Image 1 (cartoon, protein in one colour):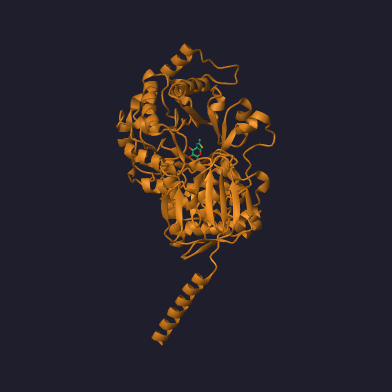
Image 2 (cartoon, rainbow, N blue to C red; image 1 turned 180 degrees about the vertical axis):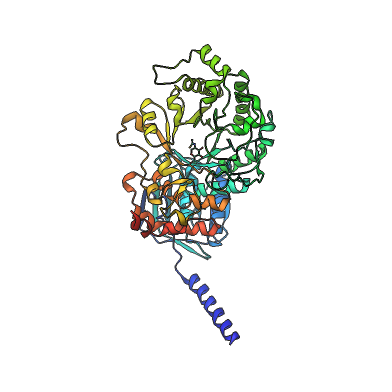
Length: 555
Ligand code: TNX
């Protein structure tokens, strides 16, 4: 009996393997995000096999890396190993995949063109970054599973991003995610055509970046004595929690991101959300402490004392090291949720208000709001002297900062539209629906505990970053959008992945595609193939979001 059953299951397994091998393994270019054009060409399929080489331009390090990554992707997906080869010789192209820099083929710096005929495959871009985007598209076109040959239908496939800023945020202060987890987050971003990681590195609950001049920031500020259970309950788990990134680890992550054409924008939140720094150096606060790295969530009253010159020196010193680690133009200086109660009672802050003439303006703007503006402008100028620009949360719009500050619109979409009309560059990250720490479903009892709110896959898909009433220059000030992953309630990597997948796929479509080309039902039909890539990598995702009826029932 037992042997018979064993025999039957062996036979079934063998048949399944044979069926899979015999199955027509065909690429499908209708990926997520959908390319702008997929035009069929009269030609036979190209047959991708292990005999194909991946050509890249000789002596171009970026393209060499691109080629190596394409080879790695093909192997992960199909098991076929394709070798790479440096060559600029056109006669090396037939039968192979060739990566090309070709400004004539593509108009946009991050755009791509994939040309497939029976004779070969060419992936072209104006820049290596564009070629990389084309590689992601080809990668997502391939079927997942062992294959000895994949047929690529002859076609010209083209695409370019609608927005230059395509961001994901990761809060590593509330909960700490180690270097491998951050790298996987970057891998996930690359698959989705994202190009900016906004890395939230400091907050009341932990300081996560080593600063050589102030070692206590990470050593003391990197640890809290316990964490509240549930939604800010009075019960604390009493477990010491923390961690930080050394400068070497940060350089490693920045390089890993750059290899995937992702810029890392560090955020050092100031003057609020600073309790971890105050715990390490109490002289930076108005009362002088003692302080304790916070085990609660929310907004703490203790902020930086900006009446003291030493605080400004401290910030300049920290930013000096931050600028050395992060070569991108932008530094995020936070600016959100900074209560003013301490400043109102602090003789030094009040003296600063008097000295700088920051009195309240016709009842509209309090003196302390102007004090935050004064502080932010000093920081902004300091960074500008070093060729950097600031991004700040939309609270900055109430603080007199000039228009060289880029605004991140988080309290809603309205501040972003207002900022754009005032002449600020703007990144749209409205909490509804781009806070990925919010629930993905109305059935919250079936979900891991989240911050609150609601951002279903469909809500993300239907978000439009450019408000209809914006015209002319103001429209151009909307640089793009970003989803934020605040981690008060996200304690581990699988949970973080669950919150971003598949919502990142919806975000990718709105950042890449023309608004008129977006179609939710069509997206839902293409999504399962992207999810196969998630499964291949073992990434956690919300499977129920794939059910197109889930939202229909509830809306
Ligand atoms: C508001 S967004 C915050 C964060 C919280 C988040 C939770 C912003 C600038 N401040 O400190 O983590 O809400 O969703």
